[in-house]
Image 1 (cartoon, rainbow, N blue to C red):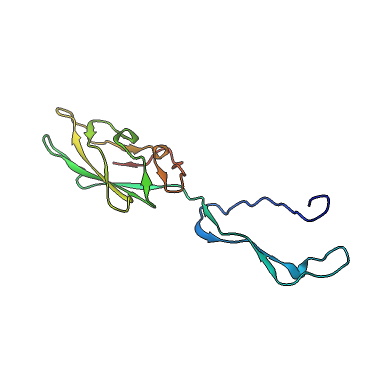
Image 2: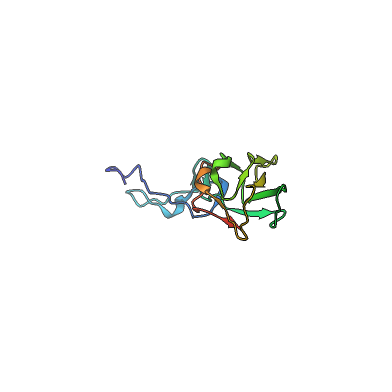
Length: 150
């Protein structure tokens, strides 16, 4: 409280993994009294505020996971929410190259084409996605260091 007890402050910490566009704080004035002991009447509501604490997560799938020379396959990256900033440098692909990923209209489903490196025989390969390179519409970057698909 301020010295004259007319301004009170508190720290609001939003709940983790929450997205809520419409929030208000409400004070029940009946629970407050002035210096003379008079109880307040009604309530006081704050202006609207939004909370966005979730971070992007993703899964990776391959249309075909057993490729031969000259073949390609579609790589699908499905995000839990719309993301921006994804590019080929966020995806580590040993023994192949990826085209630039393209998004659907909602920016939750991104696809790229995987072309295996010629003259390489490798029965187990992994694609890794660095989620720190993408962010949701609230500006929260992904925190998982990598996801993979064999």
